[in-house]
Image 1 (cartoon, rainbow, N blue to C red):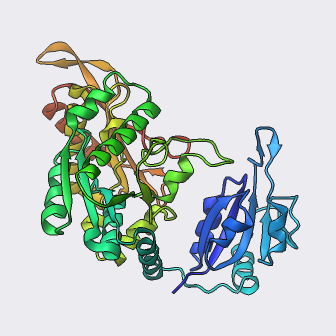
Image 2: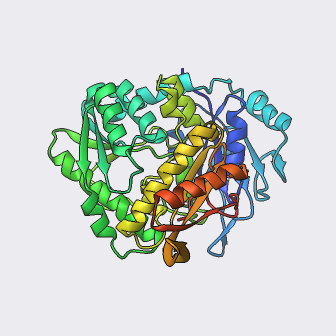
Image 3: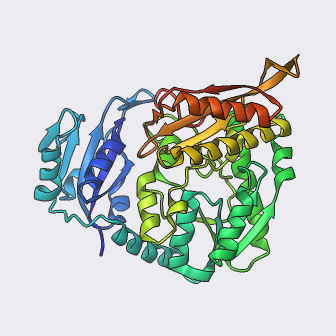
Length: 430
């Protein structure tokens, strides 16, 4: 069943995602598109029932005010504007409409049906994937995280054995992560799985690189190179599957919004990419990705596992990566996850991890002065990854985690708990 759609045109609003979520919560699908979308581009979208011109504080870009193409007003599609005074719409709002006002537009004016749900979304995506891929093959980067796991399940449903999953151990995985991926996907789920140990290759490329954006782009670019090499060993690979989700795209920058941080599957792709992309989750928020995984029948422990960034521990080993700090990071993170599981915090907290900065602090070991690394703990809760609040952890639990880390990871001299929400911080440190 084709889902009706409300299109949100970004004319400088900082609340595009708020509007999109408001409409989706009504059971109607919504997508955010650039302000300068053409009638031809709009015509390629299916079942567009209405358009929202969403203005805001970022209306001026490079000295010029962004405007919608006048020809869009003549398409006969119901349209309202929010904080966009140049609009020719009959209905204009100076601020976000109330829930009742939005419902009146979506249902009474646009005549939309509340048919946005995961069952229909999956059916639509299966059809889109089959149409896009045809009889060709898809190569998928399978980290074992929520996004790539859901993409894998969706692609398997759509094209079955035409999918080849590649798990690259870049040396930046959490403790036992690669071993678990091989066990679950290679053995239990019987996926076409290729395992590549590229630890030395990645760490060599990253040696001495301290800039976070440069690290992300090196990791993203090197990932693609590895896939290209694996693809050359296979026949018929023409597509690259990716677990890109909507917050990745938002934070990597739009025509009216600055980059928060580039994501390895958005900002780090090389210009000479040899594959066409298959990104069926690109319009989903994180909670919707999990709902999609549940609908696809993935086990709960896989769907609700905490997120892990594509660059892995590379963006948690702050500054230039060294093997000793990376090992301290990996071991401290494993201890944190073990303790959260023991206390039930793993079921309460959305994301939790450790970070190791690129400096040492003085400490005392064996009754002598010693210099050791600092481990920073971060634990946050969020719904859509666009904002996040800090989990207030019982002090006794924190003390126990600190005692274990300093006892079991000799290179660590201090443990801290970080309490900054998003915003002003981001969830990750780099």
